[in-house]
Image (tube, rainbow, N blue to C red; front, side, top):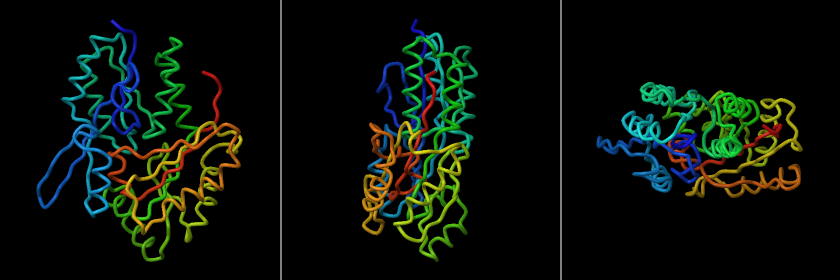
Length: 297
């Protein structure tokens, strides 16, 4: 029997068994086209490219938690193969049902532990890498895991820029009146994505004002925020981009503004959001993430 393993769901930027002893459960993506409802397993039956292509054509998706039967099947196997199984659901601020369904499945096993956390996407990948470092040093136990989870909750934040708020509205992430005002005034909204979930915080009228708005948000949300204390930085954007939303222009503006402020050796980590998250942001987004330095665990 092996010692420990880690389980995330597909809201994390990680493929199943991409790393040794790390497993990924697919969340559920639901399509309703002209009354025909189709359910997909994220990353198994549907890709981010398919989701963004259909969203660009005006299609909306909804999402649901990991199917409890899939979780039960995986936990049954892992509970026999490992002494301890640590499970990290999608944050409860995003999907309370995601936490509940995995709690229900885990209750059948003494060695399957649910650890509530607040990361998704690239932020989860960074968290996984730190958890694997604990495992490498034989420190992957609940007290050390909670140190990592609490550290990320306090020292990471992301600014989400999206031109079309209809997807966030459709998923209930922001209020309809916010979207109406933004569209009426031709405002580019910046939404925070942190331990409090997705919250609209700042509005800017022009693209060239975006970096200042992002810096203001980070300075407000993160204690003692200084660029020289940044440990990792991510810049994520949709794969399929609408010519109506100048994503490349905004990306270059963010890079040119902040690159010179980052500590030496820190580079932008790029990519995109997982499909289950992109279902709510829509196909035209940019997410800018920062993680502050931490003491050695």
